[in-house]
Every structure is written in C-alpha cells, then in structure tokens.
Amino acid sequence: MTQQSKRIGGALLAGCLLAGLPAVCPRVACAQAKQEDDPATAALRRRALELYHQGKFVDAMPLLEKLATAHPNDFVVKEHWGYCILEYSRTLTDPAARKTARVHARTLAMEAQKSGDQSDLLQELVAIPEDGSEMKFSARPDVDAALKAAEAERAKGNLDQAREGYLHVLELDPSNYDATVYVGDVYFSEHAYNQAGEWFGKAVQIDPNREMAYRFWGDALAMSGNNDGAREKYINAVLAQPYNRASWLALRQWADRIQQPFNGILLENKSSARTDGGNRGTLDDDSLEPGNLEASAWAAYGKTVQVWKQGKFLKEYPKQTAYRRSLKEETEGLDAMVKVLARDAASEKKAAKLDPTLLELVQIEREGLLEPFVLLNRADPDIAQDYPAYGAEHHDKLYHYMDEFVLPRAAPAAK
Image (cartoon, rainbow, N blue to C red; front, top):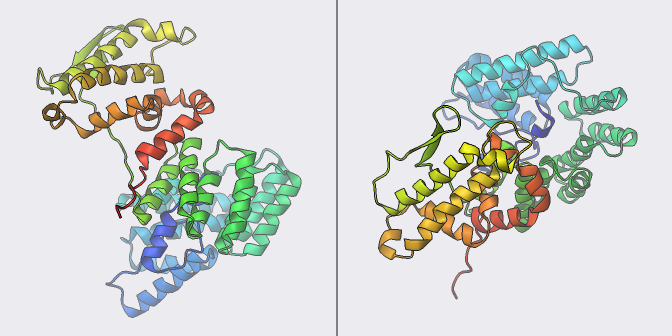
C-alpha cells in the first residue's frame, strides 16, 4: 500500500457518520451491519467493527476472518480482513513473514474484487506487489526501521507508542514528511483536531506538492465544524496532485456530506482527429447533425487538432521527438470552439439546444480559465505532463477555477 493511502480521505468520515459509528480510525472505510445477520453474527460483526474503528487491526483480524469464513461472498468483510492482515504485517519482524502476510492480504483483495468490490481501499490492496515486497519509507536504514516500528505500534492500536515512534523518526530526520503527517494522524484518531492540524500544516511546509497533508488537514477541519477551512484544504489537496484519485474522492465526499454543489464539468467529445499514417489528420464528425452550432464548434476544435498533429506540435516543442497532446493544443482547440459558440450562443433559441457544458465553457473562457479547465478536467497522461510547470506559475488561477466552477458557492438566500 502506498504511503499516501493511509486514509482514503473523507470516505471513513462519511461512512462512519452514516453508520452511527465513531470516526476514530481515519484510515479505512466502514462496513455496516446487515439486516440478515443472526444475533450471534451481528454481535461478532459489531465487536469486529468496534476494534476496527479503534485502529486495533490485529485484534479485529481474527473476528473478521470468522465473519469472512461464514460469509465468503461478503466482499466488504473480506476487504476489511485483508486490510487488517496488511496492518498486521507491519508488526512482524521477520521479512519473510511480512511478505507472506502481504501476499495473503492481496489475495483476499483479489477475491473481493471478483465478487464485485470496487472501493478505493480495495484498489490500494490490489496494488500490493504479487510477491508481497514492500516499499521503503526512507533510503536511510535507521529512518526506515524507525518508521516501520512506529507503524507496527499504530497497527496494534497503541497510539501513544506510535506517536513516540514517529517523533523519534523526526529526531533522526526532521524533514520526514510521512512521519510528520502520521503524528497528526494519531492526534486525529484521538479527536485532537487542532493539534492534528498543526502537524498537517508542518507537513505542508515540508512538501507543498504532496496532497496527503492537505487532505488530512481538511478532514480535521471538517470534523471541527470549520467547513470553509476544510474546503480550502481539500481544494489545495487536488491542486497539489490533481491526478491522484484520493484527493478528488475526499473533496467530492466532503461536498456531498455538507450538500456543497460539486460540478464535474464533463465535456463529452463529439469530434475527434485521428491520424491515418504519418501526421495526416482526418476529422470524424459523422455523429453530428450538419449545419448546427454545436457541429460547427466541434469542427473548429477538430481542425485545430489536425494542425497540431500535422506539425505545429514539433514547432512549438522542438526538443520533443514525437507528437503528444499538450496544454497549448487543447486550450487552442477549445478557444476555437468558444469563438464559434460565442457568435450565436447569445441567441436564446440556439443556446437552448446546446450541451449545457458548452455554455459553461464559454463562461470559463470569459474568465480566462481555459487552461485550468484543460488541466483539471480534460487532461490525459500527455497533457498532464504540462501541469507541474503551469501549477508552479499559476496556482492562483487553478484555485480560482476550482473555487468558482467546480465548487460554486451557493448564492445567499433572499431576505
């Protein structure tokens, strides 16, 4: 499991609140009781979840194993059992035993996946290497060993010892991002949200380009009732690593929980340029009705893509050896669309027939935010390569786009 997936954002908080359970373990989602449980199974499930939410994964592990054995098709229980085994592996000193436990955790996750499980936690378990090998926390052997020792205490639910272990890591390596976040994570588990936030803030200072500290900080502020502060942290988590699923998941779940409007702004492609040998582009507009405004806009977009494929990319990026989609190309293509739309979209009759997202695109362009839209809502692995440079120069524009279009603030109620 990656170090950034210690907690799947607001998933736990939302799940625990819905289940009426205390959100004391910030790392995993909740499994809820089932109506078909007999009294004995219900009691076993309740006790397993109590231990689970207290972060006592080693103690919860055998109970979840019993539940999974009795209910082999309950993929949520199987996923939770796998996670407990993963945490248990951290308590083992023998490297071979740790690898065996991690392989077991992954096997359970694969079985849960075949049964229909698609949770974010499951994706992290499935990502465990097949041979059970584990990543290092640090290239320094002493720091790596100290962090693993602290993690072992955390897995057993020994919060005080875990905190001492993380602080020891920081004595060895004061700029260790993970240990700094994990100290805050312990305070979060103890409901000391202000102290947790202080540590998450320290981690942000160490590395502002990692999302985990922002996301955890957002959780702490949300639990404290400071949703304005949480909103800002969740947005910054996305901007720190916009192609990380966990940061978007946390933002979306927090927005759903407080009924904050969330706008995904999904622009469905209705025109595509493809390459038929060499760099010759052809336009595919067969799905569009000829002569309408939307077709004209997509045609303008497609023509722009053709120009970039036919040589403009290599002129703009002389150090590149092959074509790729880029921020410049996509922004130019969307700008061409907007120019077509803006000519006639003011007509109420024509605007009524347009995809609402196209009208929103016109407004985004008027605000000068096409580039943030491309990077945050239209990026593929090619375009994503342009994010670091743009993000370093234009954090304010990216935040403005998220603030105004993705998380639009509700208008004040009329008096």
